[in-house]
Length: 131
Length: 131
Image (cartoon, rainbow over all chains, first blue to last red):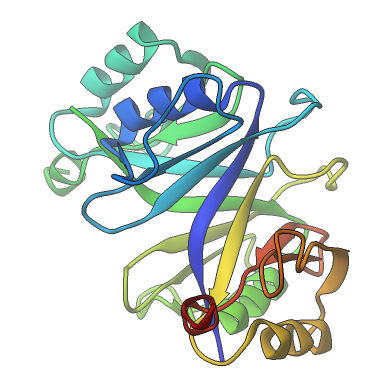
């Protein structure tokens, strides 16, 4: 007997703003019967491919320490460098740069979303396969 | 241009123990070329169905506040009550009980894994569909 992950929940201060940011990062969409609305204290987005869902839930307390759970991302196309540049333009901040720490082209960059939630960007599969 | 979630990372004190706990909860497996080994400071498990991966990474600092990111689970079969009982037997602890707060059969139970990471158990789809 096992369970499956119905959705991953993210505590936040502005559910709508964070849902828009992450929809852009991941290409997720609103559900047809649960449209994203400014001011809602819960906002759900879904991956049209896998069905993976993320639920943003407003909470009173602000983020105070490094999150113990985070997403590690790979660009669907293009390069880690281009994806990094795009995320920084759209409101992310860079936390640390661990590129190349295991040799040329390896490693990752740690970013934070507009509320400070850490996430990592790895190389795309095409980049990794190219060595 | 978007990215996809390659894996979700979980900071922890004992990567092997937590990987075993969550493998049992979710029915995830080790990767053939990355077997789970006691003592390893990183342990990766994967959903044989969706390919979703969780990476447990040992960190020096203990958990200090409620996690801002958590998983919400649904039993693949059976009931929320049976799943709850099984998880409590296997090392989870109950944090809060929000069952029935929106009417009979609704709501969820908040549990914590052996390191205190919160997760929720919702009703199975069959239970929800039964009303």
